[in-house]
Length: 118
Image: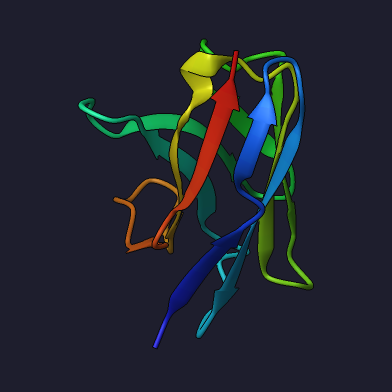
């Protein structure tokens, strides 16, 4: 059974930082991709960042330059370092993984809440 478990969310003031972690169990995704999405209240889930191969990354324009995605294949873990947080970054953040880089997102975590106060 594949599981993705996020951690690291919390409450932070604007301008602060948080580091999210997502540990995958049940299979590895070293040949696929892992990523982060978020969903704010009343809004649709949106893409934040993804990483594939060893270090190829893609970011949403809204977080480019502030967030950094990385992975540790030995630990089957993906991270999201979030700096310069803004109130608009408040959302539930979800980890996702896919077996094939070009495929759909196959697995999702339960989410971790990030709240940024002004």
